[in-house]
Length: 112
Length: 112
Image (cartoon, rainbow over all chains, first blue to last red; front, side, top):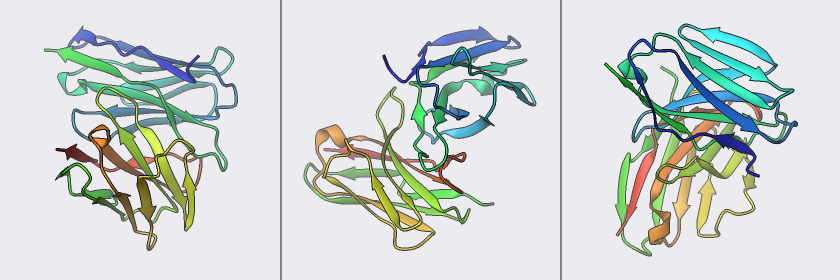
């Protein structure tokens, strides 16, 4: 079983839709959870960084962590064509173990 | 703006011809990372520096070396590039281990 599982998509939605992106993980030792957005041929851009179980909101983006289920989500409200990108979840153990373990990424396309 | 800069953005080399990729940061972060990302795959950590302390991932080929002459700069040397080394190489930084990582735009390496 891979450490981090993420549905690669592709996911296609109409403009204005609510998008739900998800990752599951196997190791309960993961402490920190991140979502990155990566446009084609560009570096990943950090969208959300969370530590504890619960929700964190930033504009149209909400990150949700459920440590008991080993499940994290990113919700995008009122999706825009400019949100079309690959979304990568990532997590690490914290402390001296700073290595990020990434999911494979979900490719999202928002159609006008 | 504080940022992570990578040069060049695109690099073409010949099979077996050494190549050096460059990363610089104005964030004054302690940790610098090098990732390899192949098409439609998650970034894979090659190595990282906590300050001057070098940490090599167990499965990073010996063909890959790195140097960090000062806080701001980090280099990735590929001694004898093979066709399988064609990829996007991403540099990232974080203030400390386990903290959020900020990525540069990447260098896309082509091996002929």
